[in-house]
Image 1 (tube, rainbow, N blue to C red):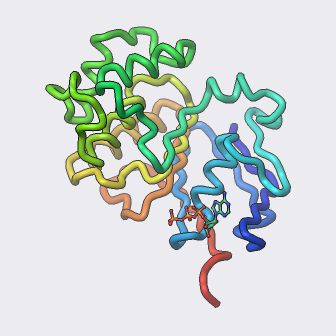
Image 2: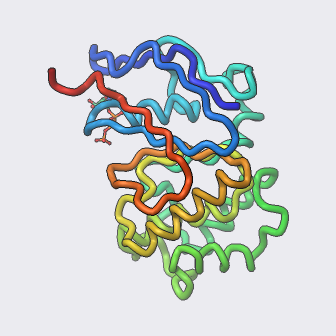
Amino acid sequence: MFEAFNLSCVRDERTLFSGLSFTIEPGDMVQIEGRNGAGKTSLLRILAGLSSPDAGEVRWQGVSTRRQRDIFHQQLLYLGHQPGVKSVLTAFENLAFYLSVNGPTVKGNASAEAIYQALENVGLLGYEDVTVAQMSAGQQRRVALARLWLSDAPLWILDEPLTAIDKQGVATLITLFEQHAQQGGMVLLTTHQDLQGVNRHVRKLRLTSAEPV
Ligand SMILES: Nc1ncnc2c1ncn2[C@@H]1O[C@H](COP(=O)(O)OP(=O)(O)OP(=O)(O)O)[C@@H](O)[C@H]1O
């Protein structure tokens, strides 16, 4: 179980949210909604342990994530706003690097074959030896997203994973999110897109404090 307890976040003397509590159980898909600047990225970064809340805490299996950072990070796959891939490396090398530093959390059969399969899933077969710097924004994002097929982490925190992805790619990703939840995973994401065609219930959590009165 993943839990936000009484979280507050202040940025530039503006309270983005306060007293925010919610729980995510295995099988849940949760979409964080809100206008530009509402604090969605700030919330996800706090949940992923990349920044600290001004109050409250984040808990994994009932224990503060700060008190079990390593254990928590093995359970988490976080994909931020930026692709977070190394531009001097090829698509293949990026995923091989990801596997090398995330050993315990990658799927048991992860290998060169699994990397090729992940690249195929994101429509990048044939681009495996192209450096990321030479790729379009959407292709760079796909390299980052390919990690989703290589990870065994139960908790996915995804900041705008569908941005710069074409219609077919969005459909593929949505199917993957559903499968992950179906298998007992947890998916927490932000997106400005309508999650059309999702067969599971998507719980919506709206950040409203930054909206004009
Ligand atoms: N490190 C920071 N220091 C100061 N202000 C910040 C910081 N990070 C975010 N902010 C401010 O906090 C507010 C919320 O930003 P955030 O990126 O969390 O919003 P968002 O809901 O993800 O927006 P968008 O939909 O545009 O991506 C913005 O006004 C932003 O300028």
